[in-house]
Image (cartoon, rainbow, N blue to C red; front, side, top):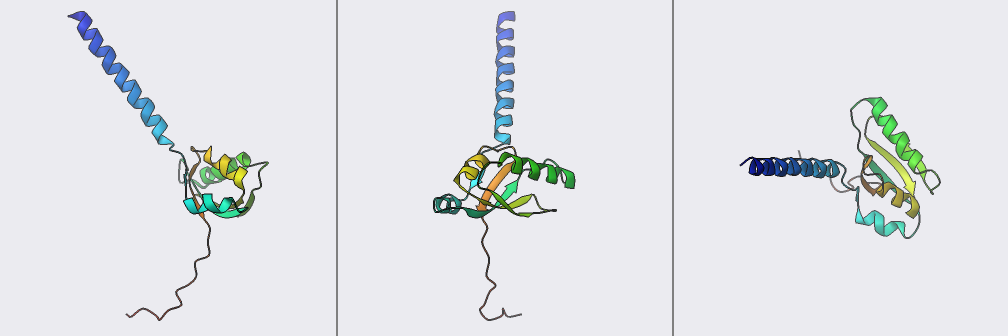
Length: 128
């Protein structure tokens, strides 16, 4: 009877540990790279918006995350276009080597998307 109880306790402990490990790994899913960025990068450097994972809303946490991403991109063809002070983002111009490095930063990088100019609506004004 005691053996069976120990077996169940060991099984429960194993499942709890496995669940915790899976949750820890799921915490930092790989960054989402928009297909448009992946396709365009083959033609040369592209301007992108990098959405960051920031632990807190403190400005110092945002600045620290931005600095860490930029340090991680040293030696690649990256140029900083804009550092946002209130949004967890960076606007960068990146090459293929920088894209590969950003993909290796799941604890810092949430998503990459193309940085495009949105033209204003040039049609008739909406009715009120």
